[in-house]
Length: 94
Image 1: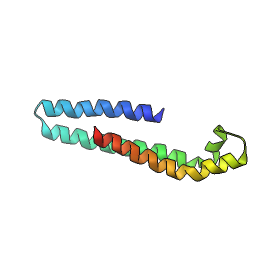
Image 2: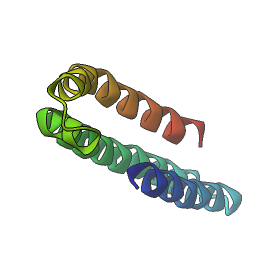
Image 3: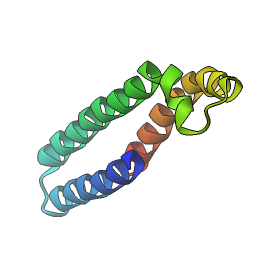
Image 4: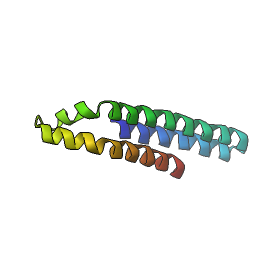
């Protein structure tokens, strides 16, 4: 769900930047690009922070076995980092 929302919102914002550049308003395009980055950073840290805060509970969505829950808890920081880097890469690639 989060990746779908991020992806669709990035496309809409990218179109906004393109429209401003096409209209010959580079200052408006710069402001739109900055707002895209700020909104993406906020969204990514909320998603990543939520995943990290619930890392000990999140494993129960996969299994009731304690070993699986522990593995998911150990992998959660890497997944959080991956979410942040992937989201920023998507925004920066436009």
